[in-house]
Image (tube, rainbow over all chains, first blue to last red; front, side):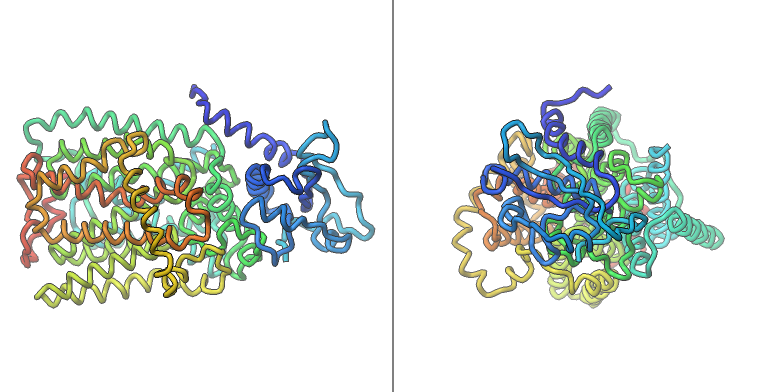
Amino acid sequence: MIMESPAQRTAKVEQEPSDRIAAQVGDGNTLLKLAGYAKTNPVVANSLGYFYFRTSYLLFPRRLFAAPAGQVINDGNDIMRIGFSPGQQWLQQHDVRSVLIFGNDFPGEETPRLEPLPPQEGHDTTQPAGTGGK
Amino acid sequence: MTLLACCLYLLLILLVGYTVIAAIHPSNQITVVQLLGLGSALGAGTMGLLLFWISLIGFIPSRTVLGIIGFLTLATLLVITKKNRLVRIRILASDWENGDKWVLAPLGLTLAALAIIVMGAVSSPLTEWDAFAIWGFKAKVLAHEALRPTPACFHDLSLSYSHLDYPLMLPFLTAGAYAAMGTIDDQTGKLLSAFLDVLLVPMVYLGLRWRLRRLPAACLSTTVALLPVMFRYGGVGCADLPLAMFYAGSIFYVAKWIDRQQTQDLFLAILFSAFIAFTKSEGAVLALINGVVLLGFGLCDKRRQAAVGAVVFFAGLFALDAAWIVWSRNLPRTHEDYGSRLLSPAVVNHLSGLKQIIPTMLVQTTDFHVWGLLWILLPVLALLGWRAFAQRPVLALWILLGLHLMIYALVYCVTPWNLTALIPVTLDRLLLHVLPAVVLLAGWHWAEAGAGQRHVGNPGLQNTTDASVRPEQTDKH
């Protein structure tokens, strides 16, 4: 049996939110939305970046959108700067079926948390998910 | 079951590598270390390029593709066997000297260290930032989509953090492991990553044995295996150690070619240089530097063969990496885009940064918790074995080391990131790429210092044109 080092334990704490969300997400793509302090507080940029990159990795070929395809994301600061909030049509076009909220508007709210979007009219649920962000 | 499939994939890589050796060194003998080190390294690089080319045709890595590669490899071996040109594997060396029995101690330590790295790798999924954001993500993309047509992900700027233009050796090899396993299991798949990382040690040993006796070569190799930086980056799923591993092969065979002009050394130098260019962006620069050094020594050499070798080197390098150069030319560059920045005349304006960068690099090399005493060992052994400076391969390696460090210092000069924040998190990884040159130089100077020089099969110190001297027939590992 291999003993867990302190570094491994720390890594597990960092990974837990991504692992939890990846297990919850069903079919279709997901939109990342920032709430409360996460919209502006630069302190969270690093943890936001780690969370976004790792969750994107875990979910692929489903996509986690934090920006349209033409916007550059290199780190958490970029996600905060872009503050992506697409309209209903964009969500439908990109097969977005849930919203992942990072941060909270009210104390005590779980973060990050996943909220499913209501099924859209004419939404073809048999279509495979994850066809990129163009 | 997935672990077994992944192990079979590694065996396939070894088989491919053995076939490449058989093609380059027909009718020769190789040792077990050469088979496991050189064979696996060649097999990995070849497999990565093959999977890339096959993906360009429109096929993702799959069990069928791996099966075809395995079938063609066996068919090639059959042909080689029929022509009686198969490479034989020598289990026991015949040149054991007094004191060589002590080699079991460093060997045991090395195996223990490498086992820890491998076990650590497969005990957790990808957790390193670059491992999942860049290499692991690309592996998943390549496991799902062929490169024809180009997957949308490679042009999606919102994925810019994954460095869209980075070379694809590690992602393709990982995608191959996923194909063999029949599932995307990054925890078991890290066995591939750990396999590539630990190969650095036998590759370094092979280079050391060219000059050194068995025991000192084994001791220096063990020093590498026990470096804290090996435990830090071994098996995490990043491309830095695979780059260092391929780089070890490239500089060793460049140095050997410069010394003896044996065709097989040139072929191996070309192959390993092509592999490094397809492993990381830094590798492309390092491959060109290998060629420039080869050319420089070729022009200074009176033998026509030496200069022709440089031309062949560049032709081979571009032939092997041409598909990558063409396919990747339209990929969006990240804001880093070090290639353009280094080639821009504006680089001169940033040279003042060297005042901060060079001392930081020097301090890093003396950090015992990262490098042990390795970097300090090099100047000490260079002083003790100063006569080695007169040897062309040693001189070539010093030039390679100097150019390598200079390029990295310049990269820091032009980086768009905050230098104070960037250096602490990247410098040890970048210096890891230089590790093979440092260890080989330390060993080759040590050999000249007298303590460890080989007594047999070492005609390489003179410039011989005797084509009948077959180094691989005399090299004993």
